[in-house]
Image (tube, rainbow, N blue to C red):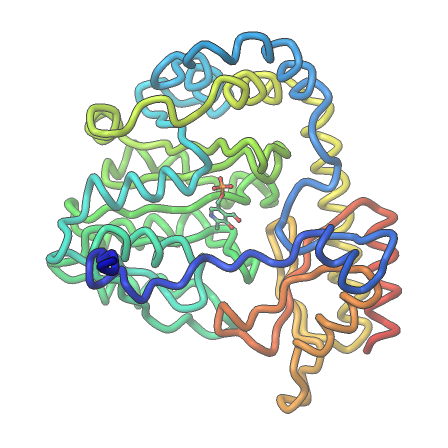
Length: 369
Ligand SMILES: Cc1ncc(COP(=O)(O)O)c(C=O)c1O
């Protein structure tokens, strides 16, 4: 039988490598309980109102959802204070990132520009679309290199991707800094700000880019229901952009990618103020605690505006690998994210859990160090 061939540039693709699941860890280390603090999920679990909506609509799943999810878009528009024509919802914000690359960048000609140690999806989506992917070094202290990004844009740059609050550093850039970047970028280059963690940034008005959308029609914000809204498993995200760009995407995209239960749960969770507010309380309290306690253990901790922090367990000792800490925590039933795959081998990323999970993690970390 002849071997199947695919596009030559796809033959050596490596699959996305998510961490081990809770069940896999339990089995491997013979543990009864495992605390997962590795994927920046919501510590409270799923909103009760979202769960009720899923149950209520389960009998309807033999129907197709309404194409383009107009009810969900309307609910998102109301919540975010923009018009419905500016919203594209998708199967996770990953789908929005994918659609942006596909609609904007010419395969084999254009490039996507971002910085090193960034969220891996920008590279993956660019490769899939046969678009060159270029990264520049981060600024001092792992900051987003805004001035260098502006300087690195070329006539081939179809999209600049920037994450704020950033994954994996947790660092956020201000509205004024982004205005300066946007002013320096050509009108025909999209500036995509990935705001997957924006709900956790404080003070909100310093970091929230919505006010810039009218000034810069080439700006796009992407957001998600996977973090602050606790629906990672349902896969819902959205983009906020100019109505014209949204129109192009709507005309070109595959239909029905946000399924019926996801749509109903998304609409329900936007009304669940109690769930959202408790999530914010727990995460912000945990962030303060982590930062203070982990610094007190002698680690380097970055200033996070997100629902996770990035830290270097042994700042004075580059010989010591963060992998050791990761593995020692794993044996104690705590999953964190070592950042080797981001090119930051000396660092670990850990998200805030419930108050009691945070306490257990900090105790374990102290023992390990
Ligand atoms: C920076 C960033 N963008 C986007 C996403 C993807 O979110 P979604 O679950 O909506 O696809 C993540 C998920 O971890 C992320 O960290």
